[in-house]
Length: 156
Image (tube, rainbow, N blue to C red; front, side, top):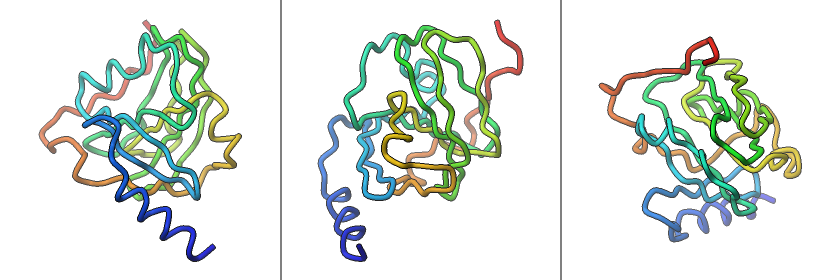
């Protein structure tokens, strides 16, 4: 097991990215290809209008500062699971979200990242609160002057 983790990290570091905006992440022994949403426009659009994600693909939302961000499923036909992640890479909480729902799901503690995957992905892979997401690079975070706008606490 001691060899498996460094080997996985080496593979991840050497893996080509599928798109310029992708990032290869790891949770335990599981590799994830994550599209990066690190601008206000990219975070606002997220996975809207998507009809599918590959089995180990997702979207990582990167925020300029840690806060209790909220997510909804407006215009999103996919059922999605979201993991809110602190600046230290540890998963704060995981929430299952239903297609097209306007219910807002919040991080339970300040989070710098949020990782969206297919519904049930985290449970199926034994990923839980407190697990660490590896491969998050501080360099992908937006400039510090970017506005920090969590979703409002009211539904529209």
